[in-house]
View (cartoon, rainbow, N blue to C red):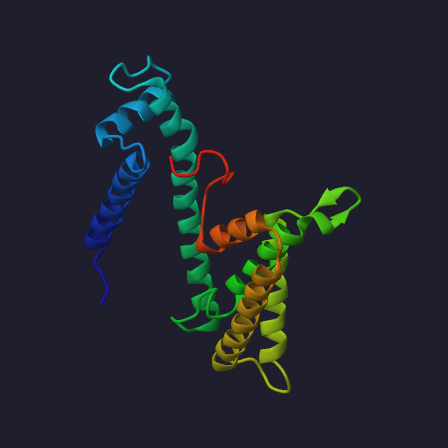
Length: 211
């Protein structure tokens, strides 16, 4: 069922308005609860550089502007990127079930991130230590190549073979990640790896987490 042009425009603007409302509410949720109207006033005062809000303390304003707002905006941008990546992937393999987890790409990224978190100090080349983002990117690339090679053995690539190969690579990468986390002796690194695999936009788990 296809929407008409007018209905599609209404849906589009409705989703945009809903996104802005969700961002406002999400910024105000936390151990320090802030009313949506106060969040809106704080953001407006910071963006247009007006006087501070008298009804809200400076500490709360700093929490809203410097800690929560960047994380929520990053979450929204990341969600948009994931949606776009999912659309491209589904169009590429001609299957609405295709997504990074089914094809093993996300699991490969998790392996790379876990390796960077727990073994990052050992992976130093010319004074440059492997970062979490770099490790996740490398892991995703390796997993993608593994899926393509496994799906193309002796036959042409097909959607079914890609999905089956992705399931195999995903299970293998998940097992490797769990093994590395289990064998690691760094308790803080294990906690950081667990938080990363669950999904976190905290810049540093030691400071500011939970505000």
